[in-house]
Amino acid sequence: MRYSPIRKGDIPHSLASIEKAEKIWGYKPEFNFEKGLKLAVNWYWKNLKLKTCFIYRTIEELNEII
Image (cartoon, rainbow, N blue to C red; front, side, top):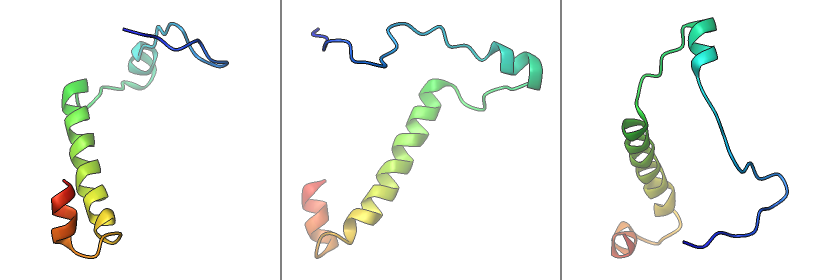
């Protein structure tokens, strides 16, 4: 694996946690990472396909690409 040089503003290590939000506001995520990622990817595919159709002359032309 190759890494690029560190850029200004990069965060080399993160200790992100939602514990404080859980304690203060009772926050509980609705989805785990895997389910959230699947939902996000499906949403982007659906929405990007619809918007991309307007760029191509026909849906058939779009289907050739995807």
